Length: 238
Figure (cartoon, rainbow, N blue to C red):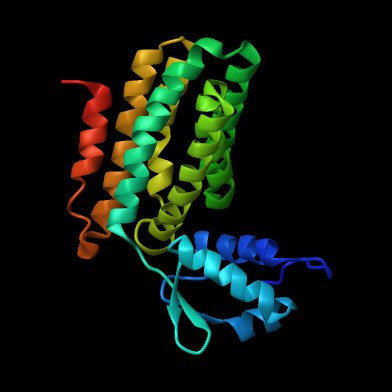
């Protein structure tokens, strides 16, 4: 397990963030078993913050408790993905429509720069860099709608990241490179001040992302997708 910078004041939050990052990026793969003693030894802390960190991760659904103070990294959940993307479709589409009238030229330039960073990462096939730029792109498109909406969208983006890493690492490594045109059209709607059109493009884009992931994990009950289509159609209209 990778080390984490620690000092005597490190607490369960630091350990939680470290383990969460390893799980979200796939460095701790679904099905992996971790123990309190092993984590404490590997990163150089006592068991107390590790125990609390693992409890928080269990509450988030990222770990399942096992006997003997151990836990197993959870695998793909179609239900969790549907709930995450159902929320993203509705919130990000509405957030974009609310945010666009308040966007300054400098803010829109920031959106364009995030898109440019995604393009550069696609050229280099650098998924780690793309994920960060992609998160900024989506966050910035809704940020002027308010801190509360931005914070909620960031939380949902974090949840989506794990599904994206799962797909990239196990099923379809280049799926994200093929989505550039959709991001370009959303950026164009932003630059043209088209709130309604951009919201519809956002809904279609997020729904397609979710359905691609579901299709690749079909053996886990991923053939459903009804809530994804419902959210998309609610935004896009008849």
